[in-house]
Length: 268
Length: 290
Image (cartoon, rainbow over the protein chains, first blue to last red):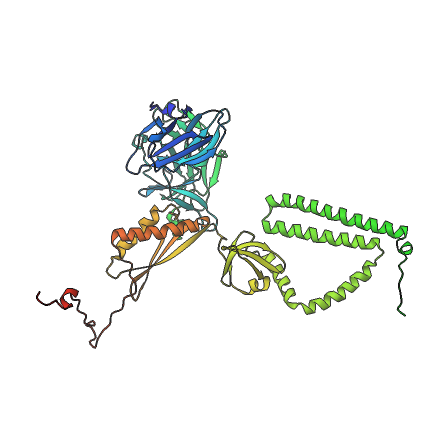
C-alpha cells in the first residue's frame, strides 16, 4: 500500500498492479479503478459526512466495498497506466452569492469563486483512452436567460470571498479570481452571474488550484456585458503551473448577457 | 367460327421499335439510379444544414420531379404525344379533384402546415388527445409515433382545425404537481419543505425558481400547486424522482397527505354523528365461571 499526498503527484500517471485496485481519495469522492479479465472497471462513492483527504492507494481488490457499482469498459491492455486529472465543469455555471452583493456605479471589485472540479479517468499509453468523468460535487441544473432561448447551466452558490485566503483550500475545487467592473451609471445588483467554465484554464499553485482571471465589465441592463479571460497564469501565487487547457477555445473578449439582475427578472 | 388473332412479331418488333424500347429502358434504369444518387447527395448536404423536415421536403420534391421527367422522357421514346397526354391528365385531374375534396383539403392544409411550421420532425406534439413524436410531415398527413410505439397517421386538415400542443418547442418546461395536505399542517412549513425538496433534486432547475401556489381550501385538504422547471429531456427523471422525494420527505416530517374525509352529522348542526369506540373484549360474551 503506498500513499502519494503530494498535489503534483496526485495527477501523475500510476501503474496499476493487476491484482489490486487503485483508489483515489479526492475530497468528497473516492474513485476506484481496476483491470480484470481484459476489461477496465471504474466505480466511485461519495461521502456526504466529510472529506476523505487526497491520496492514491493501491488497494487489494477483495477489500473493495461490496456495494460499489462498477462500470466496465472494454479497452486493450496495452499498458496498465491510469491517470485521474482535474477538469473544470463541462457547462456554464450560474454563480449565486450567498448574500446579495451591490457594486456602486463606477466601482470595481475582485471576488474569489470556488468552482467544483470534474475528475477525468484515462487509461493506457501512448494514446490514453478516456473512460469517464466524475464530478467531485453533484451540482443542480439551472437555467440562465429567457425560458425560450437561454442555456442550461449548473447552479453554484458561492461565498464570493474578497480575500483569497478566505477561499477554501481543497483540491477538488478551483479558485476563480473574478474582477467585476461596474461601468454603468447605476448600482449593480450582483445576484447571479453566468461563468462559462468551459472556456477557463486550470492552474496549479502551491497547495490549491486556480483558474485564469475573469474580467466582467457591466455597462447596464440594456447592454451586453464584456467578458475578458486572461491568457496569463493567475498572479495570486508565483509560478502557477498550467494543469489543463480550456475545454473549449474562447475569443479574447466575449460579449454576453452575463448578469441577471432583479430588474430584468421582475420588469420593475 | 371464332376469330383467331395472329401476332406477327416481325411486324411489331421492328428494329426501330426495338431501339426505342432499349433507349426507354436505358432512360428508366439510368434515370432512377441517378435520382437515387442525387437524393443521397442532397440528404448528406441538407442533413447538417437544414432541419429534418426541410431536408425531407427538398429530397422528396427533387425525387418526384426527377421521376416525372424520366417517365415523360421514356414515353417520348415511344412517340407518345406529351401535350395530348397532359391535356387528358388535366381533365382527369379535375374530375379526380372534385371526387377527392377531402384529400385536396388535406393537401392545402399540409401546405399551410409546412409554411407555418408549428412543429418539426422529432418534436413531441399533442393533437386531440394523441401524444407522440413526429416521424414525418407529408402533404396529406402527419405521422407520429406514440410513446408505446404505436403508429398514428393524423390528416393535416385535423391538425389545422384542432388545438395542437408542441410539448418540446422550448428548451425548458414546468412540471405542475397538485398536492393536498391536511388542514392541521402549517402551510409555511410545507412550502419551505417543498422548496428544499426541489433544491435537492438534481433534475429540478434552480432557476427559474419553483412555483408554489396555495390554490384552494379543498373538501378534505389544503390544495397546493407545486411547479418545477426542468430541461425538456429530464421529464421522466424528474417526475419519478420528485414524487418519491416529496412522499419520503412528507413521511419523515410527519406531514399528512389526506384522503377524502366524510363526517356524518345526525340532527345537530355542529355535533358529529355519535360513534363510541369500545374494546371488543368488553362486548364478547364471557365463558361461564370466569
